[in-house]
Amino acid sequence: MHDGAPAHIHRSVKQVLRKTFTDERVISRDFPTSWPPHSPDLTPCVFWLWGFIKDQVYRKQPGTLSHLKDSIIRHVRGINEDLLRSAVEHTVLRMERVVENHGTHIGIM
Image (cartoon, rainbow, N blue to C red; front, side):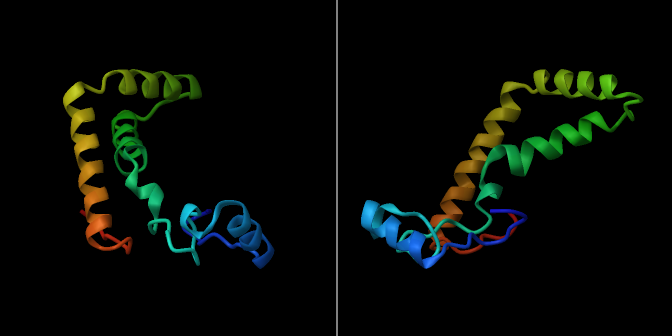
């Protein structure tokens, strides 16, 4: 999946998947078990960590690549337990929303 584009599966690939794994074990479009839309947005690193770190790092513009790397490392190491717990709790809420919406787009929480 690239830039939110849906996966493209050729008929011959679908036939092999069905023969090898059965419909119930394949998670893909055109199979009974669909992959949630924009599923990378369901992970804490995508919906929280990258934005959080970017905001922290760019408060003071890093002057060099070395300063940028050091700042990223310092801010990642400085994330406290409460922030991590909150990110995980929001992940659970997002998963519940996906289930409630039967795998359709959940919108912004």
